[in-house]
Image (cartoon, rainbow, N blue to C red; front, side, top):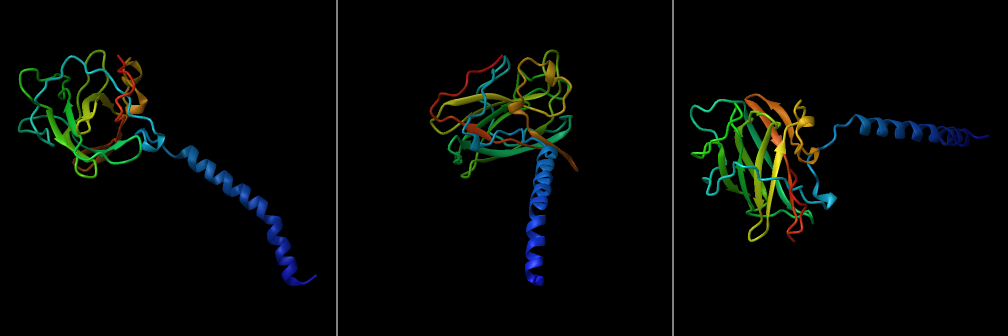
Length: 206
């Protein structure tokens, strides 16, 4: 038998084992990889709706940063993209945000920790604020309204991973958990909103 034939047979015999090993390595990588909480537009499923709650105030100021002098708390920058269920960016989408302060209290007389902005032409947004506190009956969360130009309003809430109160909050949804990481000056979070532009989105919970 020639050397080249022996080499061919040796490679052919080892191929199934090599392929099996590669498959096991890929499977292990997928098992160890963290789940991505942000719903992908590839799922063709809109971001779930949630209750507005009792503390929404219309006519919030236009601002992408809710930070102001004297405000205590851990700084967080939340970024993401507003998309349609067809995976297309939604330019100039309105994003209205409100949440509690570090101690879990809402400002119901003014507009502290309240504001709205418009996504850019690629549907991207950037929010600068603080990590909200918790209060009785609720886990840590941020209220959001998102609306495409002349489209239906999505009212929902964003949550933080690893919070002990998540499992005790009856409104909490795993589909609405942000990806949050530590940063030198606080934290960063990411979440992509997927809008049902037909207005047939899911009913609010809670």
